[in-house]
Amino acid sequence: MKIFLIGLPGSGKTTLGKKLAVKLGLSFFDLDLQIEQAEQSAISEIFSKKGEDYFRKVEAQVLSEFCTSTDGLVLSTGGGAPCFHGNLEKMNAAGQTVFLDVPSKEIMNRLLRTNLAKRPLFAKMNPEEFKDKIEFMRSQRMPYYQKAKLILKGAAISVDDLADKIRA
Image (tube, rainbow, N blue to C red; front, side, top):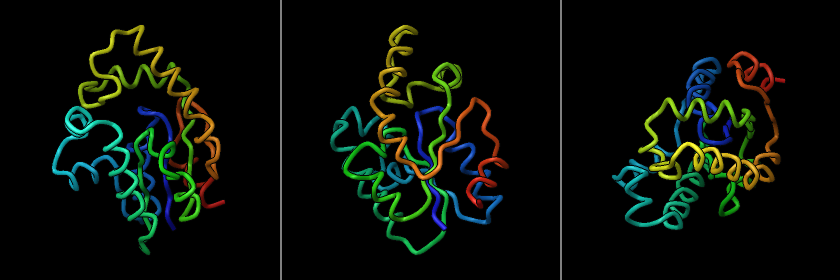
C-alpha cells in the first residue's frame, strides 16, 4: 500500500505521516528531505540558486521513483508537488492520495510557529503578505488537491481518523 499525503504547507503531512506509517507498519518518507538528499542541498538553497522550475523538475523525478517503487510507504509531499508535472495523476495511479484540508487560519498559526526561513515560499514576508500568500496558494492549488482519493477536513485531524478512513 502506498499513501501520499498532500495539502498546504503546515497542514500536518509530515507529523501525521510519521504517526500513520507507524500505525500501519509502513516506511515513512518526506519528499522534501528526499530531494535535499538527492541534491545535497537545502530546499531554500535550491530555490535561491537554481529556481523553482528546477526544484519542481527534481521533485517530479524523485516522486516518480516512489510511485514506481514496489514497496509500501507513506509519503509526505511538499505542498506544491501535486500541482506540477502530472504528479497528482502519478500518485493517484500508484496508490491512495489523501488531502489534509486544514483551514487557512490554522495553517497560518502553525507556520508562524516554525522557522519560515526554511520555507522558501514564505521567507521574509510580513504578516499581511503571509496571510495573502496562504489564501492565494489555497485558491490556486485547491483544484489539484480536490482530486485526491480521500479528503479529510478540519483543524485537528487525528492519526486514528486518518488510518480508519484509509482502511475503509
